[in-house]
Image 1 (cartoon, rainbow, N blue to C red):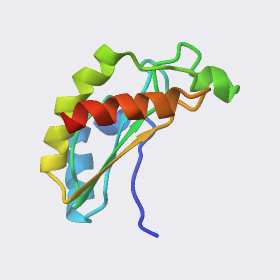
Image 2 (cartoon, rainbow, N blue to C red):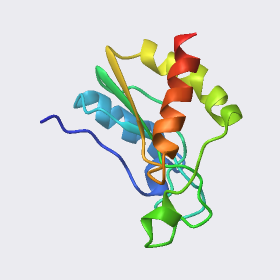
Image 3 (cartoon, rainbow, N blue to C red):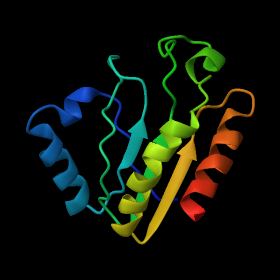
Length: 127
């Protein structure tokens, strides 16, 4: 199994830490998992897009206002709008140009939100 790195504290990208963090990952060829998630929490990481290895990854958590809930349906119950996904499509294309392989994961696991959003995003990236 291949290791990837998903950071869960904003301090990794505060000030000069951003360059140091990404440089470390690049030097060690460790894939960084870019995230889209609610901001303003201790675990919040800004949506920094960077390929640090031959594998690029993006994980969409949604923007639930209940991110601090222990209930996964409240925490991840967020359906991205078409506008939000349309804003991400060119960013994902750009990231894909920096890596040999790019994976996009949707972790908004409530009802069919992840599947529906994945289909919409796939159609946007295919056109």
